[in-house]
Image (cartoon, rainbow, N blue to C red):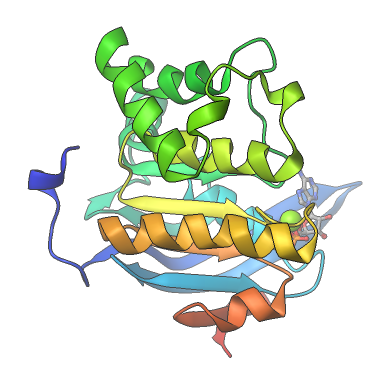
Length: 234
Ligand code: ADP
Ligand code: MG
């Protein structure tokens, strides 16, 4: 995906329609999502908030094609996903979706630069081009001087900034983040979120961000929560 193929801001890039997710646990069925529907548009940042165990990570994993719903539909940039085989789902995820986890999940043996290069190379880009873009992205999140550091030699806030650079390495149309600042102090959280915000606004990405931080949620365009297995606007 390069910028010339991107649609105008405001298009619905992610939609969940009547999504259900049940888990079987010790003979009984837990209905985490009963009927969850939402739309996220390009250039829009939506906060997903709510108590622990309400199904936020489940919903995000389904939106990010990491997990399949028990029912309903997930549509990514107009592509209906329920009938796709695992190869196509994986490729769609690689090209369209960036994911930031609460704990960074960077590869410990690789430098910050390599961590941002790898998804680009997996997506078919050459080594030199990947390195060039990785350097630009790390500079954008204020880490120009940290390219050669391994994750273990970075602070928590720096690790999350690398994770954000990695998540947007393939210029995804959709950025999903599951409590990306949950392990950071408030000041560092605000700084990390500032970088995330800047990237989303600059690229017309659709962002769905799980957070417990009410101050951060208040700065986002919309706030959703999960109530009785459905989505409610707050
Ligand atoms: P949140 O992110 O809002 O804290 P989760 O989406 O992680 O919530 O979990 C929602 C509910 O689903 C919880 O009750 C959790 O125990 C249950 N759950 C999540 N994953 C599984 C699983 N793999 N097997 C069984 N139950 C699960
Ligand atoms: Mg969670």
